[in-house]
Structures are given as structure tokens and as C-alpha cells.
Length: 124
Image 1 (cartoon, rainbow, N blue to C red):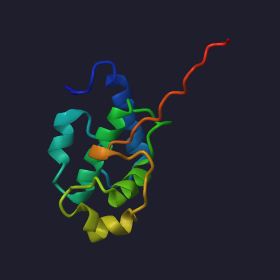
Image 2 (image 1 turned 135 degrees about the vertical axis):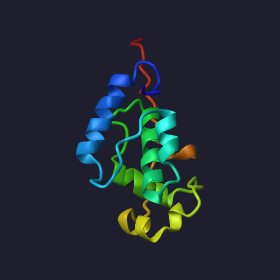
Image 3 (image 1 turned 60 degrees about the horizontal axis):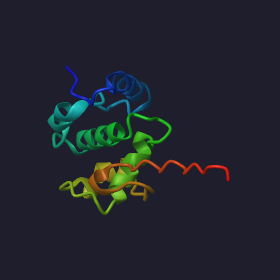
């Protein structure tokens, strides 16, 4: 049973399929829900990155248009001041694969913040 927020189960399954096709070929399946993410975090730096990506993407309601790709996200995490995962930002293999590069919108908790919706103005 997948433990994702109500109303996101279908999107979560589609996100997992998309990640399997477009994510790194050596990545584990995209973890869905808190329990799956927590199980893989800490098993390796790469698996931790996949878990962090899955959490951030879930917070964006699995919206492909709003959330960066795994590669862009991972590079952003490597450069982020919020990256508190022991050893992740200095792991030689992770630095080689994901050169640190600032990612606009990557905030606390390594969650990509959704852009604010434009304010609709009423005609005068």
C-alpha cells in the first residue's frame, strides 16, 4: 500500500513510471510515500538523493512542469546551504555525477518551492 497524500496516488504511480524511464538508469525505483523514502535514505549517498528528490517532487504534487529534473535537483542539493546530510556534499562520486550548481527555489528541507500563482486582477 502506498502512503501518499489522498488524491495523489495516481500521479505518484505516473511519477514512478516517468522516473523509471527518464531518471538515472542505476537509480532505485522512485520511493512513494514517507515509509518508502525513509527506507532508502542513508543506504548510500545516491539512494539518499533519490529519497530527497521523491519528497520534494511529492511536495510539488508530482508536477513535471514545476519540479526540476533529477539531475538539476541533485546538482542543486550538492550546492545547497540546506544540505545537512552527513557526507553527501563531499562524496567524491556524487560531486563527479552532480557538480554543485545553485538551484533557484530549493529551500529548507531541500524542497523545491512552487512558484506563486499570478494574482488575478479584476477589471475596473
